Length: 265
Ligand SMILES: Nc1ncnc2c1ncn2[C@@H]1O[C@H](COP(=O)(O)OP(=O)(O)OC[C@H]2O[C@@H]([n+]3cccc(C(=O)O)c3)[C@H](O)[C@@H]2O)[C@@H](O)[C@H]1O
Ligand SMILES: Nc1ncnc2c1ncn2[C@@H]1O[C@H](COP(=O)(O)OP(=O)(O)OP(=O)(O)O)[C@@H](O)[C@H]1O
Ligand SMILES: [Mg+2]
Image (cartoon, rainbow, N blue to C red):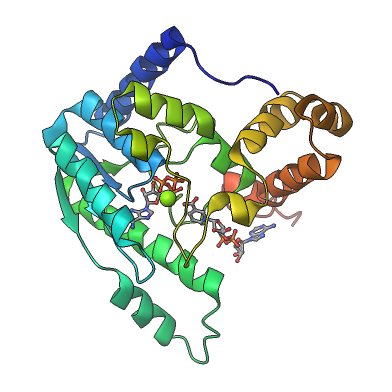
């Protein structure tokens, strides 16, 4: 298995690099600070720690946004992050907002994915309300594995101004969380989008993140063949193909909405 783990010096360099990135984004926007959604997961926890280091705790605001399926444990973990960091935060229940949207659509099938994605989009609306009103930028929490597999809601959790940890594989985010002093239980917590009950990223994708990370590095970015990648990782070729399919099918999520070329008139 390819080793994507970062050494201590690399972790320090990534930390400094990302802290500088957040500072630049906020300064370039002429903003007074940042806002981000706190879910109790490792991605938002790590991003919050980096934001506080970059901007100072008084310039970071957290939003804890429970839906009808959010677990008490995750929401109290989210509050714990805000309290440990000493940042201002609010807890805003979004269940009734999501219900209102779904109920307003005549004969809505109440499809699980559509409802879950609506929760992610409502969170984006709230983040941008605060950003607009307080002249802040919205910090995204997307990592490289999510970006390249399209494992996010289009115009939902991806509706952000920048992704500070977007150059890190999932396992590297966990390493950076520990390096920053985040609680170990949060650094190692299994990833869940929590858009519907009992959802976990790895169950839904059908592949573990260590393998997703490695297939991205070797096959998608590195150009190794499917067979060579499968051999190197000790997995079936079908696993490599699954990740490649996620990558290809989600290309539309990584580019601006297309318009036709100018017509020949
Ligand atoms: N080829 C194409 N060209 C242009 N647009 C295309 C398209 N194919 C679909 N679309 C559009 O994209 C829509 C589908 O995309 P989208 O609405 O995102 O929906 P979809 O990709 O089906 O669902 C979102 C996925 O991301 C996961 N997720 C979401 C949020 C957070 C996290 C997390 O890790 O925390 C994970 C979630 O569990 C689910 O698997 C279609 O309804 C259509 O509007
Ligand atoms: N209940 C919530 N309240 C506020 N923000 C949320 C909530 N759920 C999700 N989000 C936002 O959406 C982002 C994407 O969710 P995602 O699950 O990918 O990240 P995570 O929960 O931080 O980490 P992990 O992927 O390991 O679960 C979160 O990082 C957070 O910014
Ligand atoms: Mg999560």
